[in-house]
Length: 258
Image 1: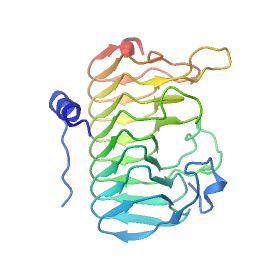
Image 2: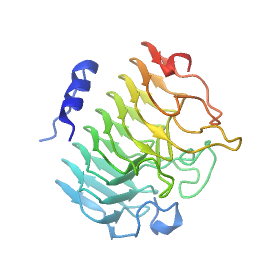
Image 3: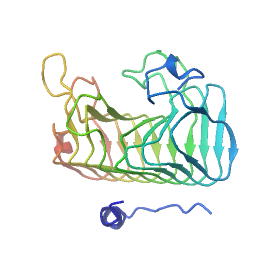
Image 4: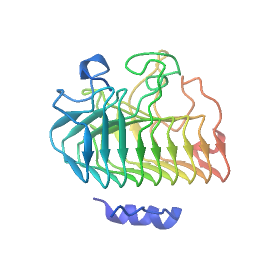
């Protein structure tokens, strides 16, 4: 893991790292993993996911300590399930995490499968830390600590077509996404108690008019500062239809006018 970068952002943003001592039929929603894999539910102390796995709708996955996604693994909890993690969620290289569900998961807040009109109550007591993950789909998750993603994505390609949405989450610490590359990336309708840093991310999707349609940063409430640097395209409203971000600290870089 790029520990130097993580130590840097922990120092700069004063992050507190908390120490910790989708659908019943995955095909009913957008495809997350290459196959359904293993159904997961019930209590665990620590859990490491290898290969593909999912949490069926209506079930609860409870991990009292840490949930780890091994390199190349995939966990599809983009369902009307409940996931509770007492410690950290650690997402390895080329792994995919889908967590949480709400009417706004796939676009504007309108009822659509697999969430319908339901908002789930997934919860992480520590941090979500991703080291060159393929992607994460984070929707309406409560995270007591920080969300940090360094590197990752499929690269500068639309094949495979991979998005990285961070929508409607409540984050007690800070949110940092640095160096992800793929189809589309956005930070929309989140409540972040700390600061938000979005840097060197690349999204290749274009909108209906042919304009770049990634790096949409709208409708967030930020207790610290909002900093956007060297993203391609630059942080923007795009065609999201979203409004300005409410920021208690500074708006810097590309996000100065958002």
